Amino acid sequence: MASVSLSGITKSYGKHAVIHGVDISIADGEFVVLVGPSGCGKSTLLRMLAGLETITGGTIEIGDTVVNDLEPKQRDIAMVFQNYALYPHMTVAANMGFSLRHRGTAKEDIASRVEWAAGILGLSQYLGRYPRELSGGQRQRVAMGRAIVRNPKVFLFDEPLSNLDAKLRVVMRSEIKALHQRLKTTTVYVTHDQVEAMTMADKIVVLNGGNVEQIGAPLELYDRPANQFVAGFIGSPAMNFIPGTIGPDGFSADGVALPLPHGTRADGQRALYGVRPEHFALSPDGLPAEIVVVEPMGSETQVTMKLGATQVIGVFRERVAAAPGETITVAPDTTAIHLFDAETGARLN
Image (cartoon, rainbow, N blue to C red):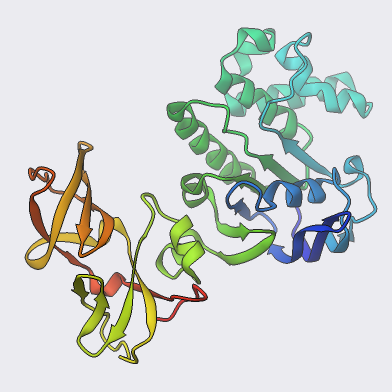
């Protein structure tokens, strides 16, 4: 196990810069998720950490060693890919032990390590099978087993669940987190799925356009997003943004006046009023909202509605019987309102 440090990392392809001076510190044993939209640079950062991409500028350290010029095999890392990358002509046991055989490890030690990893991952009964005889989830476990038999300093995961169906993703998400809690190996995990990031990470790094927008614990990013981008990316369904002006009588938007958090200075500033769908409540004293779509989801109801001229989403624990075109009254939780500068997107409160 080891800490990881990325300092001033840049990456350019010719004149085209894709990573712009990224700084990330990862503590020994920490589970860090790099998250962001497609093309934000998260997989490029992971590949640079693995040594599969050269860096244009900056320093990468694993433990106390600067690894900028080290080959991937010299960095003592193990990587799990999106497509499993298993050898189809090898059994599960042979796939899991391949890297150890390549390093010249004794057969007895390989067998012992493979059996240990298979026991952790529930693969003991499949060691004699071939990848074609396994389900997607079992293949991903084999790929994870191939990584953990090496006992590396750092695990790297590059969108490992994106090829699995929704139900299996939930199961594997839990298994990867449980594996980390057992092994305590430093882990860097790349995904575009913010639900994976929220449920798995000790710390999340939100990337956008090759820049770090915010780094923090999952609930820190959820409760105190640094800007509109992070606020809109973290949370599902996404945060609602209502444009308007901060005034003495509340937040004035097109066709509606919204309550402001206590102590907000009324300075006439143009802003975005951010409220998460789950922070609306049905209230007889609330604001009138015209129903657009009602989506019953069992334990909760998701409602698309119009507040003044702005269409927003609310999520309610109660059943909502209203039909499209009808009006309900809703109240935003003023203790959970986020205000952002209309021009820069920076947090105001």
